[in-house]
Image (cartoon, rainbow, N blue to C red; front, top):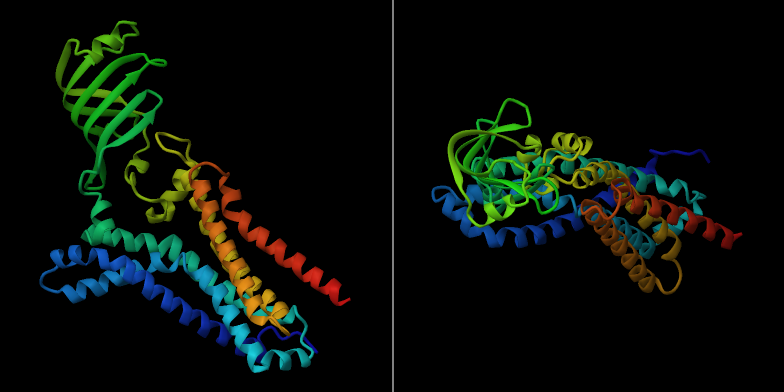
Length: 379
């Protein structure tokens, strides 16, 4: 027998896999969409009294990428497991074994399925999802759309800088980042507050680290005096100003997406922030996000392959339902651990590459060892 990677068996089983995965994904999507939409119905209806049905349907389309991305890996695992279970119960799997096809030859449909759905998951995660969120923010649709609207001032943000501590609200006008209602605490060493600035607004001076603040008050004058901290904190003499130049080493690209979850940030900005030195933000969030997007495809491929291998080996003979339960638990555990590792990476508890790639690589090693052990038993 010659290897036929796109032969009749591969096409038949790939169609079966796609049907099962599509059915499971549709059910999970409907449940997730219902949970996501119901609390926001009031906001959508208040914002669109003329065409409520059209707005709700459009909002469902915009929310779909973010609902599908976390569901695709586990839905792939469930779809392959369901298809293999049905193949075994109907006797088709025995017919395939009797045809002389090797176990490696049986993995081709799962590999093709994983590559196809992994590519879809990566595209949705990296490009389609951020575009859909940008549309929601532009039209102020739903809770996230209103919260992430860049044309309105954000909530107060505390930003740690080399020069001190900044408390401000951020908004954009004509693509330019503005700071509003800012307070800047200028420190020179621990517990040495030498200057306090309050201002209504600030704009960056070209692309430098200096910002022009307007209409504010200034306490202290940047002098390193032990008595300066007490003077500022207890209401010492202040000076009003209309314009004042202030040095703030904060990244304006990051300010344009401040308060936005990393999965909502456009991927080009994610890569830019991941490669830059930290200026007011933690780059671990964006480095993990960058690596996770690239690892999406491999994770889906390995979920499909693992489900295929475990099913073809364990769903034979007696105790089939018990083995199905065990396989389900393994798939759910792998999916949950993968999500937990991403959270650990975003919070700086794991290196970005380790957080994104550890679970797919460990799953690959586990499947390889499982196949070798099974081959040794048969020998």
